[in-house]
Length: 104
Image 1 (tube, rainbow, N blue to C red):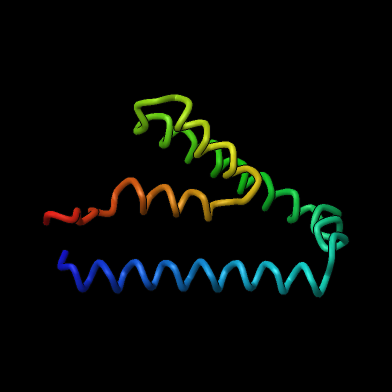
Image 2: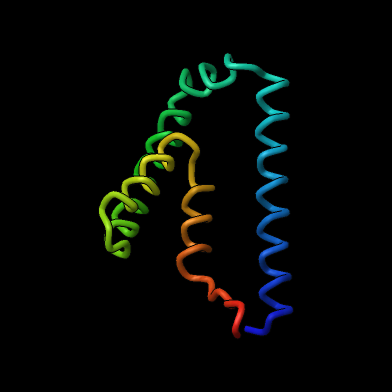
């Protein structure tokens, strides 16, 4: 991957992250805390929550399998259950995108 392609990819990921946070903030502002209660009142809301939690468990297993230090793995895994899979995406990018050092 060329330096230009890597820069474009990082910019696209950063933009997607900013858009996601903006969407979350806007949704919370318009609905408030009661929106999550409404989701949990529906059966499919519970299924969706269970799906996200199962994804968190699976992603946590992947993180623990790849990180050498268990403390570091835990520090990546625990926020997945609070912040969602945005943390998973950041871990994947940090862990697997090739980084270009100063001397390269």
